[in-house]
Amino acid sequence: MPGVMAEQRIDITCHSPSAPERVWALLSDVSTWSSWGPFDASGLESPGSPEPDGVGAVRFFRRGRRVTRERVIVFDEIRRHFAYELLEGIPARDYRADVTLEPLPGGGTAIRWRSRFRGRLPGQGPVVKLVLRRFIDDLVQRLARH
Image (tube, rainbow, N blue to C red; front, side):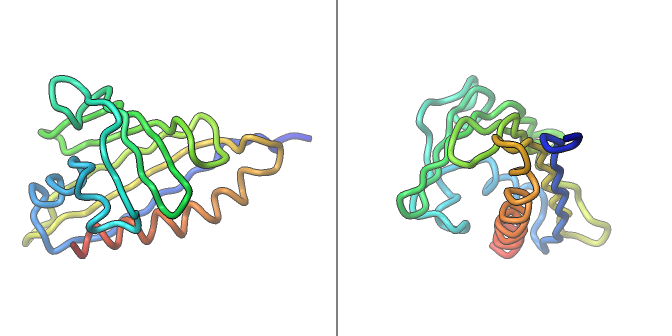
């Protein structure tokens, strides 16, 4: 059956009244995520290099009994580009998310969160996409407001 393991894509953009530097400070520091995101706890399982939250860092997020783990693969403060790959926690494989921050004319920041993945089982991708899209949209809006 063609397309049952097709790559799924999510692309969400939200505007924040805050400057890119302020948004980056929240986005790049995993310890802040539980203060602005829907998580009970967030933190570093192992640090990256040279920045603790940078490339190679393994981060965790706990929400109830569910724990998600991911590895940072891009940490570019100059270009305000952050990316990670999923290690575990949702029924997806080959998951990668890229978050970019762009200054807006007149002030503020455009936050763009793009994800791509495949479902673990045939036909699972579209269902996971539906749930993840709502979750990521909420997460980006929370980041923009905070």
